[in-house]
Amino acid sequence: MVERIRIGYANCYLLSGDRGSVLIDTCNYKDGPKILKRIKDRNVKLILLTHGHFDHVSSAKYLSERLNVPIAINEKDVPIIGNGEKSVLHGTTLLGRFFSACSMPVLKRSTYSFFEPDILLEDGQDLSQYGVKARVIALPGHTKGSVGVLTDDGEIIVGDAMFNIFRPTVARIFEEEKPMLKSVETIRSSGAKIIYVGHGRPIKNI
Image (tube, rainbow, N blue to C red; front, top):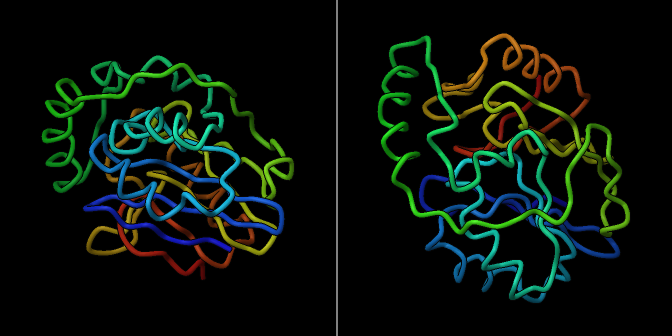
């Protein structure tokens, strides 16, 4: 079961199974206490980060310490944790270029909770040891190490590999366009019925 936790303009998700739960993304650094209140009694066994941008990782250390659980992220995104200026984002549409222009100053000056990940995620990695029937799926493009989580129940959590701001779209901003577009094809052909995004409402995969 996927539970959307909306905090401001971003989403994180609690993926729950019969034997545990996985928290996917952690929003901004001020959001940790709000998220903890929602999940502290939900048998969380892992914090999984879809990518390294501040609005997805900044409460990871806070929550990891209080829940006593490991943090997982793809190795390719480790360099941008606490170093947002290393993630150069582009946009091809008018709105994408606007988001890109706005995001770069924020990435450079944002307050991060820097951390060293405990687990490096790989494409196809099984998450059953954390109590959920799901696997990691590589979705590069928005960042080089972006990943999603595909559940056996036909749901996929994709971070910023897709957006639903105003309407469902490919990633509005990205490090690399061609991999991003290929990742959207991967999402659409995954067999998932519902796509959960980092920003906006869930999308029906039709």
